[in-house]
Image (cartoon, rainbow, N blue to C red; front, side):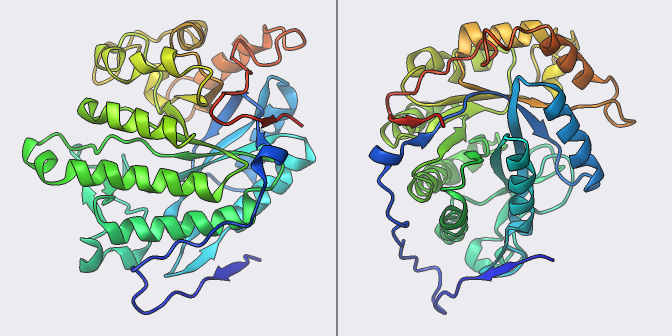
Length: 359
């Protein structure tokens, strides 16, 4: 049975006043720190059968520290100010039984469906519709340029942090990519500055309400905003990463990837290996050259220097084609986890979040 939490706000609710999180002495407790390789999950799978098969993967592969899983905003907040965190509770309980950890990704942008992943109440004028269509025409992104939308996401993070920050099996909170998924100059002139500032405000709220948990903001585009984004994340002790690991993407190489060597050891770094990364080393409609799992891993280790890698569990299904996930399992089965429990990734506690709690 789902447990719903209701947080009352005033009628003029979007005049937001932030509450302080429960007092935690981070310098004493430390930030939870269990870097390594994690399994990244598709959302909306048939449960509990899908999760059971994932647990089998975790038990059979000691190198994987746990799961990264997407949770949709409209499922976490099914109606205004009413929160349903039952799925997160269940996942944490299951992972705790086998001493594995969870990374929560709060997902509100849709890419391949017409579904709007924000609560229905956001689709109103005071939130400028809550979302906007992305260039592909197949999905919607969140209107982070609207301060009322920001306020609602901040309140969601406050509720999540109050319940889960101190949970020993919650490893990190991951916020979705900075790319607005719109390329028109007119759109950027009108919205991009407020959009990026809104996302950064949300990221800072996540760090405030998860003081003992790693927070990672996915960053990719726009390139013009990267200096502001990186400097803000660094000064706010927020980690950085990306939804894609492409070895031969020139835009990423000249853009966000160039920052990682300078951030290594300073803030947490977490890189995703997503759907198309298994098919192409370039992405963006580039050749389907199917890079090896070894080459993806080595590129990340040598060039991006992550503490975390999130490998999408892309299994052989009619819509997915090749069983890339078996390739991942076969590759990591050859690893010497006893002598290198982090699978080539850096386990050094980043200076910005020190001290780290490795228990």
